[in-house]
Image 1 (cartoon, rainbow, N blue to C red):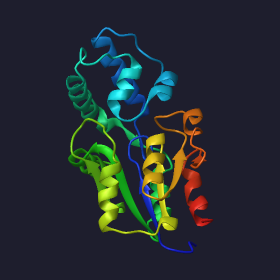
Image 2 (tube, one colour; image 1 turned 90 degrees about the vertical axis):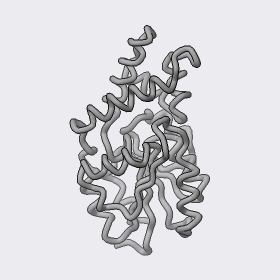
Image 3 (spheres, rainbow, N blue to C red; image 1 turned 180 degrees about the horizontal axis):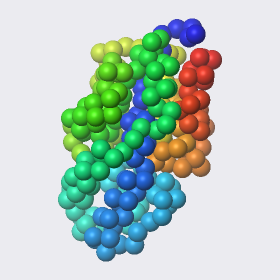
Length: 216
């Protein structure tokens, strides 16, 4: 079906895992605790970005007064408590099953490494991936360096390297590492935000991904 072995690098949150609404709700809880106005889901998807501290500033927090570290720790605690109730996107498992026999699948996330490994196990898909790549803390900084370090020791032809994500940061990582960015417009950033990257391919859901990759 596929002309050559491809490496497919998936983002986790908002790409495979449907956690947009819980992240929005937890943000509003933090805003309320710090006596800031809450935001709508539509606003959340307009302001979300990496690093997370920048997105928090867009949401209305002021640093250092609001103590980013304390906010991040509370979010991490509450997110982990809510995680068992979260689900994969409806097309995620079928998409992985369609690709895994002929492609090398990787997860690259701005989640803490140990959290990421545990979450993939809980959702029953950790065995689908040849590598699970997270970062070393809970503060949601760039995952570019993690990806760069991996591909420095696992060289891959750039014309067979695809990054699947739901944010412009995923596209930035793809461009920096020489791969093709494919953005899925159902995650943490709204479609109009994703359209700002003219080099990225934009798909409405994961369902369209296997057929797109088959054509490349």
